[in-house]
Image (cartoon, rainbow, N blue to C red; front, top):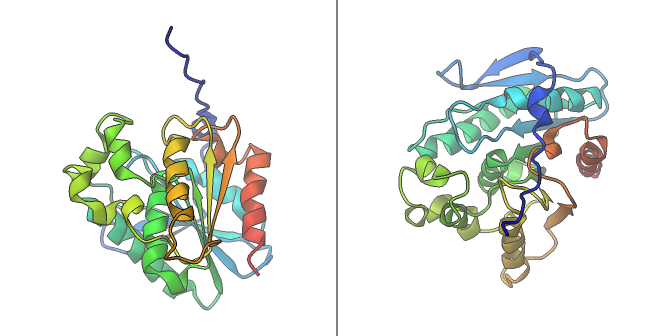
Length: 258
């Protein structure tokens, strides 16, 4: 008898639409080289949070679903930037180039106002946040990865969401291990990975295997990556700010930065 899959909560996509208070541009493609800026007036701290949305690299999925989360962070007192990037299947490098360009350009514009930069990436956004953290070490104070894609090869092998990895890369994952977090160095900076144990889009086993590899790596100093696995939580609840208990886990991690 076939085991029933858990029901996937997609309520984040039914939240009321929110417009960005400000838009900042960082490149020539005005539609995609831009970011929503939710500037807090509460002056709670000197942190800038940068959100990176997911969508399994698909062109039709943009930062819109992340706006309620950005607004919730702003209401907590955190100025929040939610970046957009070009999503061109078969041209994987442009995703990473745009993310790096957005962070570099916008942080340089705003660096007189903020002294701490925190990346929060969801799904593929977590994948892009990890790449950014590996490259921009000195600019990133902390990364919080929500259900991140950390193993392209196995995602491809398991045929998760059909051929999403092959479509993204334009070729097999084994030809682009330079883009696969599972085969890259581990981040040396402060990193938190938060993963639901019934995630259908990014199965927890993939994140667990990444963490197992991290724990067994004797060439690095242990303790830089913290892993939080959430019981009975799927892929999308983690970015719905109406799930206050989950939202507060992220707030607690932000507040640990002094």
